[in-house]
Image 1 (cartoon, rainbow, N blue to C red):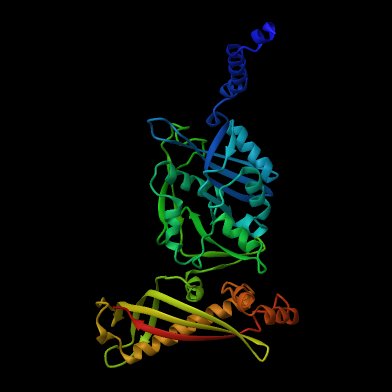
Image 2: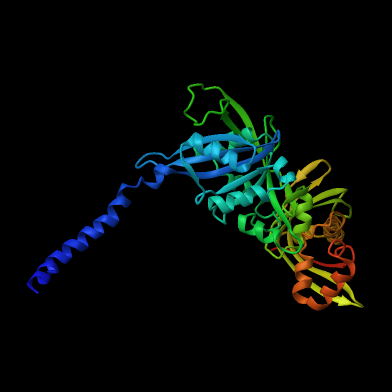
Length: 409
């Protein structure tokens, strides 16, 4: 009995517990820090060039009390996985994507289909669902170098270049989460903003001085030679169906579609050839300060009817007349003549019809017709779909627009 008391004395039990805790904890201390085994990716660019996957990544290396260092790596591979492995080998670490803010896909890959590449990244690399997806045009190396230079020198974030589009991307965030939601929906249609890189000056493009050497780091070469690159966001939007880019919409087409979007949005409407006692063949530029679209879906004689009731608050920002640009105060009622208001109605009505025709002719449901009918006229809409088929349901919908324009004070 005394022996047992000696073996299981409180002091010895505490010693054994302490030794056990040490045995569990010490191996954890011996493990290398995550920063030594995993590279922090802040931006990723992927394209399909010459039958190979081309990949570029911007890597962030934190430094205590010092300016964070950004490093640029690129590689190619026969598959997405091989391209990733080759970049990881160059870095000497596995890539971590929890802080990846932007994933950019080149035109070639977008037309081929981005789902296989996106699936690999999301499933294998644990990407944040809030990462922004964009489509880029031009050479992947030029695009990567230009964006990397902006990020590394903290001149401008890619999201800030996209801000031009913020109110025109069909009022829709082009994040990983939203892209997948659209992809797995019945219509499988989604949109993605586009930025184009060029080596020549273009209107409204952002000039970037990028190192000619595509070295792995901005400090990897002593050469001071730099080339000028230009990043352009002109409002172009890529329209995707089942993960493949089908077509592109220009700024005006996107603005037309946005008339149907239920969100406060600002934009310009240009009215030409206004003639009355005040105007002489004038061009009047109107600014939309508030847009309130109301959508109503019904069935009449088994035919679907889609009605847009749109209220716009607008003010005049510029009048061009007799080749002289004249700006007028927005609060001046005298310039809202009957002829101008009539022209405004015609213009907005025409823009709305252009959006309808665009969606019908290209069979892309950017107006959310399927969603609205499926939500509010579910039973009849199911019968309608069975009758005409998913490919043709837009063409058989009757569209009607009712416009109201108010002067903004």
